[in-house]
View 1 (cartoon, helix red, strand yellow):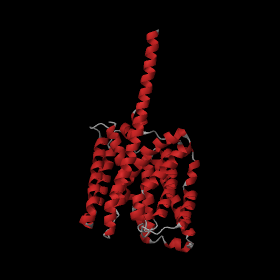
View 2 (cartoon, one colour):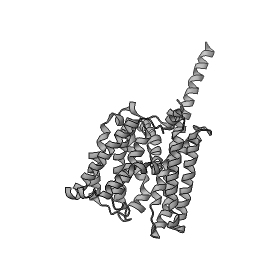
View 3 (tube, one colour):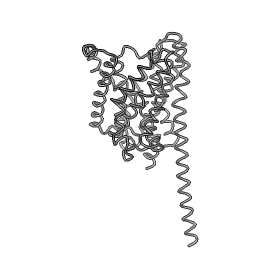
View 4 (cartoon, one colour):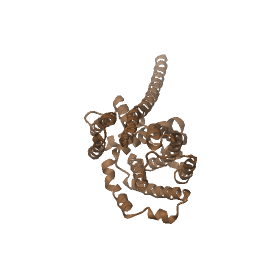
Length: 357
């Protein structure tokens, strides 16, 4: 009887030790993810600054930065030995890491070599997208589900994509009306060239989706479930939006803003990222597919590119902050009332829950 009781205590102690070890691993991995995701973009701010001082096109730097969150997740997956070396997922991750290394080297050399090497970014983006989808297509279904890259739920992905397009043009309309533009001026924006550009987004997605995957695999697949588990469903999503907004800091200072109004740019970025975080949380919870938010992120950036002459060197003020708040509340933030954002039953599993189940 005494031995049984001791064995029971030992079993309970071992269980507590395992839970404590697991919690420490999750906390350490979270710190590691944040360190990698923020450190590399902040280091790359140095060559970005040098390139801007020389008057070079600096658009390669946002593309590089978008790759980093997934790079951090893949390092964590390797560290925890979740991916076997003989799997297509392992090959996919190696391909991705090689691409990130090439992009980092290109970004460092760019201010000194000049725009002659900027084509490397586009080649890496296109080749990684084509080869990456071929690896994913033939990957074991069970592994794809654990790794969060399953290609299922296509109908739901299409539904949320259409919802996003509707919301984007609603956002576009609200922004125009706030700026006191007439309906006639809004309609004039849709010329033949713009319509052709919109139609070309469908095939172009398969050639340039990788940087959007890079962000969403970090923010949605890894970080969102972790933060929601720690802080609750809504608080976790809001906190993710703040982190996501601050992650753009080097770009807000050196790329998006004119350098004088960067603090306004940062405020707008955080507000917008909180709204997008809520909207993307709804889409991810509803579809249970990372591809829904990858497509939505692609659509957002691409549509902004179609309807904006430039997103660089913008001047920001309080009026733009107020306009952003209005647009975010009307087109994104109200998704916080969705059960997919609020209800714990719809929380996506963390990577530890996926691979240890």
